[in-house]
Length: 88
Image 1: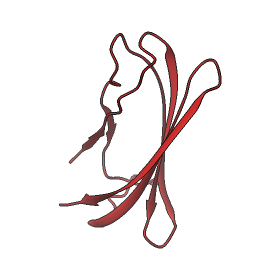
Image 2: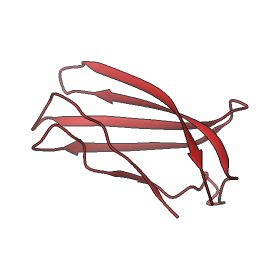
Image 3: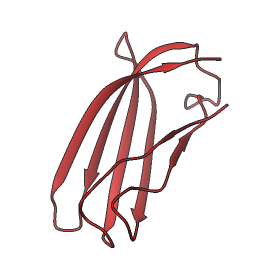
Image 4: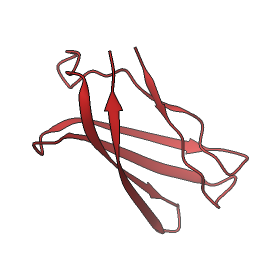
């Protein structure tokens, strides 16, 4: 079981610092994913999440909030939040 995050951006060829916070509806941080990517195009490579928390336990199915933060080497920051549904 896995889901993937991808984002469009306008910084092709630059090293992007990407952080995705996954939060339950009660506000509990379930997982923070942190990656650095450099892509030739304008879409990130898929960033996986296996549906597990920090302890390695599978989280319950339901609705979660994600908050993505992308930072360029020049310090520009873009952020986006949304809801996602985890099905098992």
